[in-house]
Image 1 (cartoon, rainbow, N blue to C red):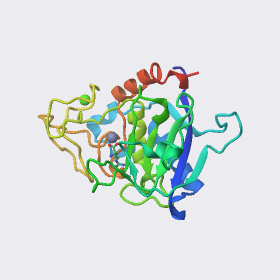
Image 2: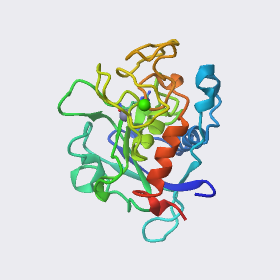
Image 3: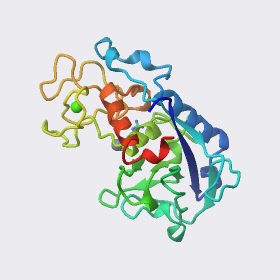
Amino acid sequence: REGPTRIPVVVHVVFNTASQNISDAQITSQIDVLNKDYRAQNTDIGQVPPVWKPRVADSRVEFELATKDPDGQPTDGITRTQTQTKKFNTQTDDVKSASTGGHDAWPADKYLNIWVCPQIFDPQDPTNEILGYAQFPGGPAETDGVVIGHRFFGTTGTAAAPFNLGRTATHEVGHWLNLRHIWGDDDGGCSGSDLVADTPNAGGPNFGTPTFPSVTCMNGPDGDMFVNYMDYTDDKGMVMFTRGQVDRMAATLDSFRSSFNG
Ligand code: ARG
Ligand code: ZN
Ligand code: CA
């Protein structure tokens, strides 16, 4: 890829109450965060511990609200749908279809679909509200994209601390570009891997606002890279992708998601 890759985005706002019908300003605040984070232009990048600064990387991925809809007609890149559903389901993907109280995806080879909805739950763990979830590359087009609860989307409007800096979308779009959690998803174990060489092997997710170093899996003295977008800290603590992660995203844009190049 020579220049930056620009990804047209459609935001499907699926709301039950009026306040969940988030403003255009809340949506554009999220697009702005994505553009800063994916170009390593976020103003909080200075929080990266000195030892990892050389690993910070610019993905050269950029995001813009779509200007044409699937029929070629002008659009603001936002759909708005009122629903009776208050809690959406990560297993059934009900938010992704009009027939189940959501909105259908736009063609996944041309748009990044982002659904913003009232609340998200995994039926396996029904007491735990989920900030967002993503579909990895290679899945069905009808469900491709990311889903985010409105209180965790953007930096204004209904966005609520400590998840009001737009990092849930940065994290979920990382999954959409094939990044895994930096601890390798074997919570508590040291054998899982994110398949990225320059993110230290880590035992499990970090939460809140950890202090450096957070040593697990004999990864001292520097410990877990909890400042990475693919960890689980509060929004203000996640500030970087690594070169290895950027290589993995680039490989995705050359394969599964090559329709966005060009
Ligand atoms: N639970 C979500 C996932 O695994 C994302 C968590 C995002 N964290 C944040 N600080 N916004 O995909
Ligand atoms: Zn995740
Ligand atoms: Ca790693």
